[in-house]
Image: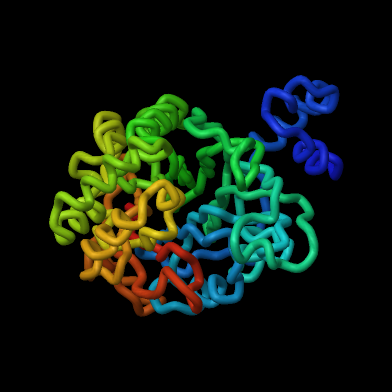
Length: 388
């Protein structure tokens, strides 16, 4: 499906989604626009070849649109852990946005790393973004953000699965058209194919809304029950109910009524009851143990949250005091791997003699995920998987 240059201007023109849907433009273009958003894009490298033979290393990273492209490329290509990842799962990959140099971020990373790429469009971005994005020179081109899978193994097939909407971004400050999606790429790993997924679940609304999105993923798996699946992504497992003043009050009360250490434990272990999506995965044969550590992957200062504007000053001061042991930040485990019909590896279980490197237990790359000097506002995670 081909991108059409007049889509962005026309999609941006209307104040509400209902106005857009009633327009002559939308009546004429709707089918082509939706087909574009639901069609995976491919780049097949002529030089792709796995770096490891004894096991698979996979990485997942929300790259914050790809704004700091050189830093991202440097870590994926040169870090002692990430450079061996023969599959890289990406979230928030821009395509034709001024804030990221109007690159097709996922494709350029694939080209530079010698990997195949599959890209799943999620949204047409109808503004330049927020905060520092607004200072980017020039305008947007294709104006797209999405998910991607990069692979040094052959890509056999792909599918984009749109997810149920739990928040409408068209009438939001950061105006978008489209919705969250799950991208699946069928990868030939040795003797067997594996479906590798990239997903970015909804941030706003409630944990139960994310569970609904996960149930939809389960009901629309692209392969059969006995096939192998590896899903990675930013699941936004923050454990809070968001989006209304009452929910904000309840969330703040939770922070104020519990010790900071307990809040930290809950945020780094959302699988222990705060996020029902894990129960949905478990019931359907997916597991996460051994594929993840419970280290922080993202953090947020309380004053940077959208809801902070709803709070009176004395409450903000109280929350800041409660979070003082963590320098005023809430620290989250948002990024995950889920597997089905595969086996995770631990430290030293497999040795790749050719590369001179051994398998490692799953982890999060140490680094900076806030403030100046970060590559992204998320840290990449990695896991090693048995190829047998």
